[in-house]
Length: 244
Ligand SMILES: [Zn+2]
Image (cartoon, rainbow, N blue to C red; front, side):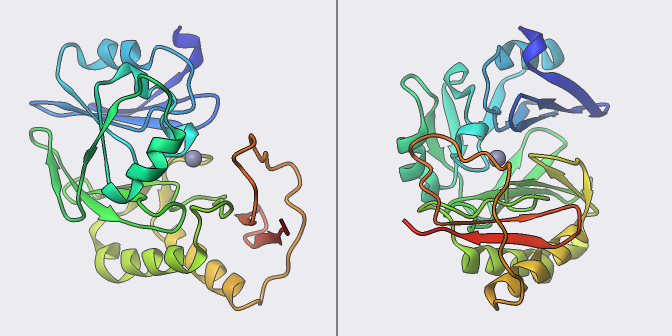
């Protein structure tokens, strides 16, 4: 079922899988492999991972609990995520999906020669995380840093997102060069954080005017949109506040 994923090699021991929606990352260490997210699925992601890392133990981390990040979670026993995401994951996961296990802010995931530091970045969801690899100077951004960031539904919070982007700018900006993003272009330069932050602040301050969401898919009955914003090709955020 490999046709369900486009496999892209980033470097000798790193790959990503582009699913129909969403992206998963695979990092091979000396002791373990780290899989970040599982896309929307469907497909034999576990099989694809095995092709690349053999029988190395695979540690699954979910950046957050949205459906396009946990779609193949049933192929794994456990999924590490921030405890603030547990309640949302309980709503979004399917029967038989990986059991959630806690991953805390500041915790270091050492897969053997490669270390990933957990950074809590709420906003897109309450328990969204990024993973920082200081030695290789990249950040796995989840949906916290994107060309299009969705802010709608009960999990989304623009003020929290702004706070998280400021935290990345103030505390971590010098520690990485590139950001591995879950949608659209990948990788992007770290300066993307500054653009997203200024647009988000302008949005909160009412300096950006709203437009209709256009062809952004608002999926499923769960997605009762409160608001969303996106960064378009123009470099500005379009925003639409919806009543419900
Ligand atoms: Zn996503």
